[in-house]
Image (cartoon, rainbow, N blue to C red; front, side, top):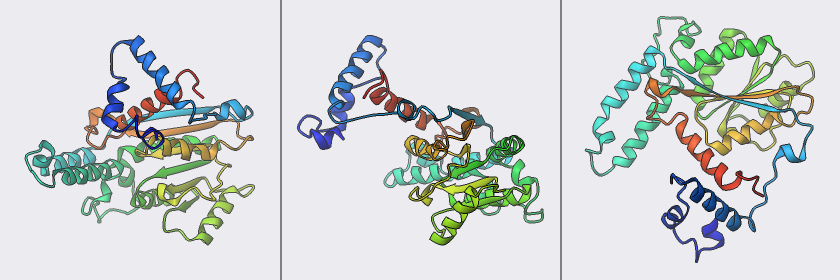
Length: 294
């Protein structure tokens, strides 16, 4: 943004990082840098929080749940890493960056659910058997969360990046007998509107609404939900955007959001299941939140 507004001063990202290096140990120097950054941004940015202008909204509880991988996921994760070890260590030249990005995507698929890979599911078993839950750490945690949320009468939005993960979540909903709606990038306008109306209808028995991040937010009004579950890593501002879907209902007595990530001890540092989002949020907080900037 600063490069666009003041190209003569902020001509390169490297120079900006050098000027505002927040990794320094000197707390006083860090405060001075943040103060200078605020002075630069103040003429161009106006920040107002919902808590400041809509005091009637219920409080938000945000929880990050770090879960372990299943034994099947750990085995598959290790196989994926060892298969492309040369690309990861940089021994292969040329298209190394593309190869590494592909590996990261495969690891993310593994973290989402091992059945996203052909041949991982035992076709001799019942497609809607307990193995669907037991072989995925995130889905096991989701199962426990939804049982408690169902008991307390909550209504849940579940977001994920991958449409194929939605397919698995849909099988899970059928398996547990939960009534649900679904919207993804391929949903027609008529089905989209029908799903939203059915979910928001007075006395609706729809418990969950499954959404992909590509479904888009235009025209989606799901304020009757009180809980948001983020299944997998999303960009920080996308997280805030999707969580805001359930903030607009003044009749909700509570409002909670949960993010599912994989524990570093489970070997999840490859796909960046939470650390990268956390660092981005920290940077955003320093630049525009510290000292109630705006």
